Length: 154
Image (cartoon, rainbow, N blue to C red; front, side, top):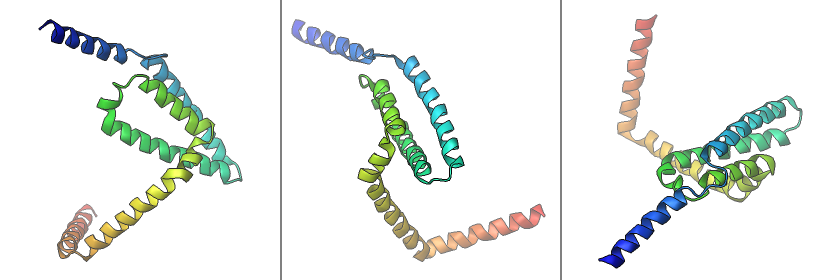
């Protein structure tokens, strides 16, 4: 009926309106993001050249958190890019992590404990796999195959 058609029209209109809700636009934010990453790479290089560990720690933490953000974005990209101001928010996060010591702050608040939990779980899984007879058999087969390939190569 007319009411459902009008409601459908409004939902489609607002969906596309929110898709276009960007202050800077995707091209500008992508350009700024790439330039910031080059700058942060340069700052990382300069940090390596110093004798202090504090700047090294900051940039290593930044790149760790950036890789986590990239992984999350890879998994959820189809949903995230539809959010209004997504690209601007991502750019803001990048600026906060790199320029305002946000990487260290977030790592200390959330990341350190979370990564310790994941590390413990991975160690537990590795231990369980090493104790598994099937895993030991597979490991022996792989080692035998690799040894055979090395003999053929030499």
